[in-house]
Every structure is written in C-alpha cells, then in structure tokens.
Length: 214
Image 1 (cartoon, rainbow, N blue to C red):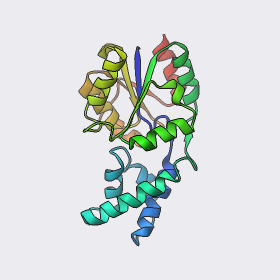
Image 2: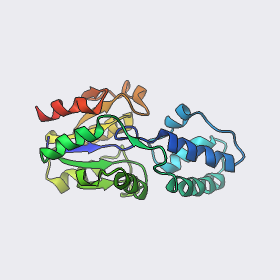
Image 3: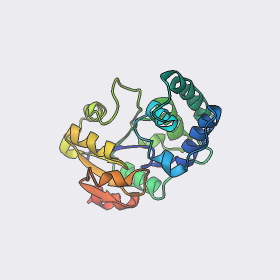
C-alpha cells in the first residue's frame, strides 16, 4: 500500500470516557440524567452536531441542540486528553508503516481542531502527512471527497489505498471512494461491520502490519 487512511475515535484512540463525560456534562446542564458509556459510543461517528442531537433525543428543539452543542464543544475542548489513550498496538503499527515510508493520514468526522489537538497531544503528528476533520470540507464521511483529496495529495492509486476504521461509516466511505477497507473489531461500533463487511478485519492494530507490509 502507498496510502493508509485512519479513522480516529475507536480506531487509533480510545476516547469513549472523555466523550461520555462531555456528553453527560452537557445533559446535566440541560437538566437531564446521564447516559451509559456504551450508549454514547453508539452515537459517535457522524460528527459533534449529530452526537449532541442523538444524546438529547428526538424531542429536543433546534434551539436546545445548538445551546447544548456550544456547551459540549467548550467542555470537550478542555477535557480532550483526560482519559483518552492510544489503543494497544497502534503506535507499533504506525512506527512500522512510517519506517517503510508508507503515506498515512487521518480522516475523521470529529472537528478538525479537536482532532489535531489529540494527534499532537498523543505524539502522533510525525506519522501523518495530513489530518482532516469533519469540518475540513463541505461534506463528511461517508462522502468520498476526503479520500479522493488524500489520494491526490499523496499521488496514490485507489488500488494502493486502504481505509481503516471501526464502523460502517468508514467502510461506506472506502466503498464510495473505490478503495479497500479494513475494519477493527475493538472500536466503538464493531457490530455495524456486519452490515458493511470490510475487505480485511483485525482485532488488534498490530495484526495489520504483516498484511500491509507483505
């Protein structure tokens, strides 16, 4: 492969607890009871506005959602790396790919300033030639624009590009872009990979090393 494109939450980083605490702080501010971590994890993947709307429920007004979103973004910005860590094997895999000069990038629906702050805070910047977030373009995943942009920047062909993620959104993005997809089973939404099966499935990021390098 000439280009590896990684999702962030649930793929490279375990951010469930920080996201859950931000969501529940937001709900508390709206006079609502907390949600279970596993429930919140299922709401992640389509960007912060969708996460907050899902967390408030279908009956929430647009005004309430906008007010809650502003609170959530402020709270989460100040608690990005309290509990968030890399999944086991991620740094080893990135180091192995980096050592072979394989191009790597992050494509996530998380807002770009949060994504870049986490990448920098966890010491990952050297591995990625680009980090794109949910507001880097006019559209988010599963729109293929981000993958097409990265392939153009790197000069990589679709046949030499792999998208790695933990949810059906990532697999759909790969399919829409005409590239291969790798799913990880340890992330936030592995159950969604049943309906959108990837070309490759791994339960640990280190498992990807021999697949890519062989």
